[in-house]
Length: 115
Image 1 (tube, rainbow, N blue to C red):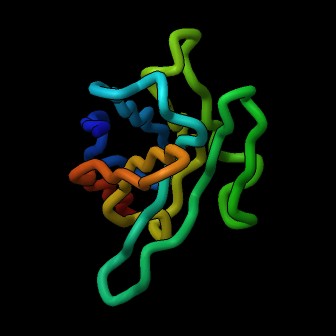
Image 2 (image 1 turned 45 degrees about the vertical axis):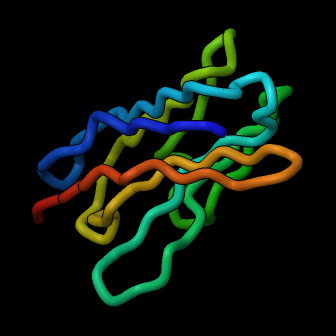
Protein backbone atom coordinates (compact mmCIF):
# COMPACT_ATOMS: atom_id res chain seq x y z
CA UNK A 1 0.00 0.00 0.00
CA UNK A 2 1.08 3.55 -0.75
CA UNK A 3 -0.27 6.68 0.92
CA UNK A 4 0.01 10.08 -0.74
CA UNK A 5 -0.41 13.46 0.94
CA UNK A 6 -0.48 16.64 -1.13
CA UNK A 7 0.20 20.17 0.06
CA UNK A 8 0.85 23.62 -1.36
CA UNK A 9 -2.40 24.55 -3.02
CA UNK A 10 -4.08 27.90 -2.56
CA UNK A 11 -5.31 31.09 -4.14
CA UNK A 12 -3.03 33.07 -6.43
CA UNK A 13 -3.43 35.83 -8.97
CA UNK A 14 -2.90 35.20 -12.65
CA UNK A 15 0.79 35.27 -13.47
CA UNK A 16 1.74 34.05 -10.02
CA UNK A 17 3.41 30.84 -8.90
CA UNK A 18 2.69 27.94 -6.60
CA UNK A 19 4.61 24.82 -5.66
CA UNK A 20 2.75 21.61 -4.90
CA UNK A 21 4.30 18.77 -2.93
CA UNK A 22 3.25 15.15 -2.60
CA UNK A 23 4.80 12.95 0.05
CA UNK A 24 4.56 9.19 -0.35
CA UNK A 25 4.68 6.70 2.50
CA UNK A 26 4.15 2.98 2.89
CA UNK A 27 5.56 0.66 0.21
CA UNK A 28 7.59 3.42 -1.42
CA UNK A 29 10.17 1.05 -2.90
CA UNK A 30 7.44 -0.34 -5.17
CA UNK A 31 6.64 3.04 -6.76
CA UNK A 32 7.59 3.51 -10.40
CA UNK A 33 5.98 6.56 -12.00
CA UNK A 34 4.54 9.49 -10.10
CA UNK A 35 2.55 12.38 -11.43
CA UNK A 36 0.04 15.15 -11.09
CA UNK A 37 -3.46 15.26 -12.52
CA UNK A 38 -6.14 17.90 -12.19
CA UNK A 39 -9.89 18.10 -12.31
CA UNK A 40 -11.82 21.30 -12.89
CA UNK A 41 -15.52 21.56 -12.01
CA UNK A 42 -17.65 19.70 -14.53
CA UNK A 43 -14.65 18.27 -16.34
CA UNK A 44 -12.83 14.96 -16.40
CA UNK A 45 -9.58 14.45 -14.54
CA UNK A 46 -6.67 15.11 -16.87
CA UNK A 47 -2.95 14.54 -16.84
CA UNK A 48 -0.73 17.49 -15.94
CA UNK A 49 2.72 15.93 -15.68
CA UNK A 50 4.42 12.64 -14.90
CA UNK A 51 7.92 11.60 -13.89
CA UNK A 52 9.43 8.14 -14.03
CA UNK A 53 11.73 6.47 -11.55
CA UNK A 54 14.68 7.57 -13.71
CA UNK A 55 13.29 11.12 -13.90
CA UNK A 56 11.97 11.11 -17.44
CA UNK A 57 9.17 13.66 -17.62
CA UNK A 58 6.01 14.19 -19.63
CA UNK A 59 3.74 17.25 -19.69
CA UNK A 60 0.34 18.18 -20.98
CA UNK A 61 0.64 20.65 -23.84
CA UNK A 62 -1.28 23.24 -21.87
CA UNK A 63 1.37 23.44 -19.14
CA UNK A 64 4.60 22.97 -21.10
CA UNK A 65 7.05 25.75 -20.41
CA UNK A 66 5.15 26.87 -17.29
CA UNK A 67 5.11 23.82 -14.99
CA UNK A 68 8.01 21.66 -13.85
CA UNK A 69 7.70 18.27 -12.19
CA UNK A 70 10.55 16.93 -10.08
CA UNK A 71 11.24 14.16 -7.61
CA UNK A 72 13.53 14.08 -4.60
CA UNK A 73 16.55 11.78 -4.46
CA UNK A 74 14.83 9.34 -2.16
CA UNK A 75 11.96 9.09 -4.69
CA UNK A 76 9.44 9.66 -1.91
CA UNK A 77 8.32 13.18 -2.72
CA UNK A 78 7.20 14.68 -6.01
CA UNK A 79 6.88 18.39 -6.66
CA UNK A 80 5.04 20.50 -9.20
CA UNK A 81 6.39 24.01 -9.67
CA UNK A 82 3.72 26.07 -11.39
CA UNK A 83 4.69 29.43 -12.87
CA UNK A 84 2.75 31.99 -14.89
CA UNK A 85 -0.52 30.54 -13.65
CA UNK A 86 -3.67 31.20 -15.62
CA UNK A 87 -7.34 31.16 -14.53
CA UNK A 88 -7.81 28.01 -16.61
CA UNK A 89 -5.34 26.24 -14.31
CA UNK A 90 -7.95 26.41 -11.55
CA UNK A 91 -8.71 22.85 -10.44
CA UNK A 92 -8.23 20.26 -7.75
CA UNK A 93 -4.75 18.80 -8.25
CA UNK A 94 -4.21 15.14 -7.43
CA UNK A 95 -0.97 13.30 -6.86
CA UNK A 96 -0.66 9.87 -8.44
CA UNK A 97 1.73 6.98 -7.87
CA UNK A 98 1.93 3.78 -9.87
CA UNK A 99 3.41 0.43 -8.93
CA UNK A 100 3.38 -2.72 -11.05
CA UNK A 101 0.13 -3.78 -9.42
CA UNK A 102 -1.83 -0.69 -8.48
CA UNK A 103 -2.41 3.03 -8.89
CA UNK A 104 -2.75 5.29 -5.88
CA UNK A 105 -4.22 8.77 -5.50
CA UNK A 106 -3.88 11.52 -2.96
CA UNK A 107 -6.83 13.41 -1.55
CA UNK A 108 -6.29 16.44 -3.77
CA UNK A 109 -5.37 20.06 -3.19
CA UNK A 110 -7.28 23.05 -4.53
CA UNK A 111 -5.54 25.55 -6.78
CA UNK A 112 -7.49 28.69 -7.61
CA UNK A 113 -6.13 31.32 -9.99
CA UNK A 114 -7.92 34.65 -10.04
CA UNK A 115 -7.91 36.92 -13.07
